[in-house]
Length: 602
Image (cartoon, rainbow, N blue to C red; front, side, top):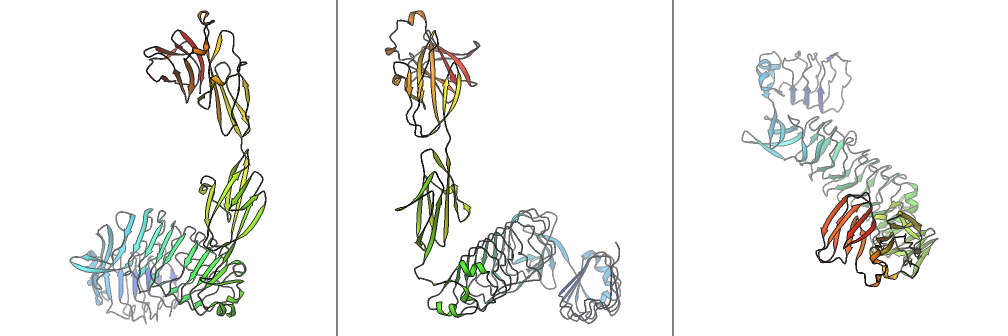
């Protein structure tokens, strides 16, 4: 691996706390000198040399980790503080103890890959701490990290999640981080493509995060502690829909949820004093915001470009200090600002808050505008209000539950219902949609012409789907071929044979939906010519893919044939009739009691 050259004093005086060198590197002298904040140095297995003065003037280094089996070359003045702990793997300890300069440090074994209750740890015995790390098996499912573990009978506090600990764990779904954790390293959640919930438990200590969740389809985030970071771990995440902020949080960091498009609402708890700049910038679906009673200052563009923000509640008696662009122009114009009783005048006079056109005190009666629109083909009914092929508005008191009924005109059906641009058609039950009014709301109902069919089934001519209009009735005349007579006529599964007129005509009831008309015929033998049909109780018809025979004598044989003469079934009639499920749709011949019937089955 090629060496990388870094010149003198490149990082001189930088506020760096931890340095990790992972490559086979060569450096000039004094690269990190005079870094008073530097506490920990970690050297990868390819590091072979650290020149004289490399960490000179860094007196607060307390931990050095070396992963190389061969001790890197160092000089007397490479480090200033030889009272630091040097951690090496147990099998490499003797090499470091026998190597000049390295043997000046307090050398301790570093135990890695210790699995305790399914989680792998690096054990820091000197400080009685454990660090979560990766192991032989990737993590999956729900993971609840404990605040401490027992190692060789000694309790170790779990204080860190090491670099890349969960990287590539694509079956990991949920992680709970205890308040004992004070540092989460880089790349920890890279390629965690199933992680949908992260919970940072309540605590008063600061948690520093060096990773991000850009690869994680997070739905729910719980923030129970103040965070520090160089780049927000949650910004630009397009999945986060629900963020809950714990009661011990005192500050909302810069860019915390910037451009989190799916986030719908935010409640800032009462202990928070500062919301930093662009904390929720560009959260385009956020429609409601609650600010706690101790918020003193809101930074630049904290809620700018939140285009759907329609409700803001501030519990602070004194209006928080803000800049002009904390909220967008549309928010000042359209959103409603609610403040506690007695604070309305203060907000009307405060810088920037004065720009809100709608300011109300909590408990004050508030009316919202309900806009209802329909096209041709139906109407919306709300109490005494009827909206048909037009747009109407009415005032509705905040918190009221309204029930709108959507009634299509004859021949039409409801196509869609949109509420504030969102399709809620599936939530309309029996033509009724209920809505609690908590902001101005627009309801648009669309209707479309309904196409209905009447399916005509008869043995000779197969079947025919006829387009019909809802509400109309239709007249049909059944023609018998020579040698056949009508056996039965069924409309929507109901026997209407007796309703045939003398000319074998039948008028349907008013069509209300998809309908079927089914006709079966019986072969007429010479002995039946003079038979009185009014006393005939033998009826053959089809329904739901089966042949049904009513009126056959108990024990009488019922045989069903295909039109090519193949016998399909032979059953003995029982009380209540016979039902024969046929293998295919088509025309069938039914023989029972010396009589033959022709019928089509669908």
